[in-house]
Length: 333
Image 1 (cartoon, rainbow, N blue to C red):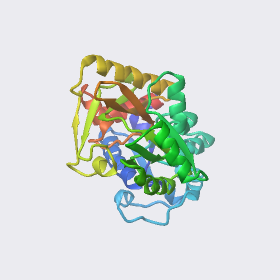
Image 2: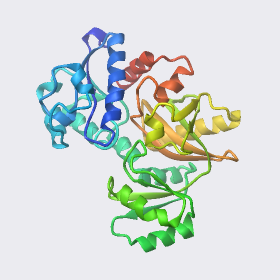
Image 3: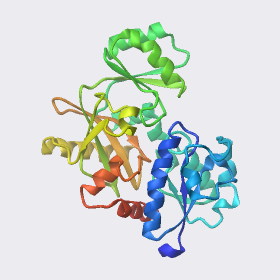
């Protein structure tokens, strides 16, 4: 295998999704880890196209270096930026980075990348498709209703009352970081929640609300990491609780019965395999008060700052952040 000093890694960050700033945070932490590990890394924000910043700090600045667009992804991957690249480390999150789009462009260019392949990435990003596969593979998931743009609100309300009841959760079908998510306590909340979800996706997912605990399980090299419980201030792990300091507490290993941990880890591996994922990922669950597990989704490119959830779970079994990054590269190669 090529030695570290000879390996050129393109660290892809930023992008055009609503999670652009989150991706920059992941990218910053990964960039420091790559330097500490002795890898030669170049930064590329595909949203800028072939004209990239000259200084590393400009990639992480809040103010954009230039105009960003989806079309620039094609220009960037097709340019000489990738001529010497051995592997792309994907620090992108959300649409266009986590849904198979950038993966397909890199495959057409013949460039290896970290994480799951095109199909697995696309299916995992599509929450409804994921839930259909969960059902097929006997992985418990909250009941749901799919809502297209053309459906009448009166029909949606009727379906929610008959199948799900209140409270329920409304979210876009293909976004991450709980972007566009609303917990509807009453029927009157649905109109505003659907309008918000439709700002981000052509389909909305309305899901049964499971009262209980927010838990997650990381996967690394087809092995489940310790279960982590999230204790958000809002009762649900929304965008503010995820990215505002002090808005959530984390417990790893989670303080739940051992048999429940084993069940969550087993369900996580089944979900990971059901969607054909590889290398690493994170499975998010709701755990009811009577310890029934409900898989919500699979994250193929989870947050990767040193304080993100997968690094926290890895640390609990003695894997440092730098070691985690190193293992992801080696497994992907």
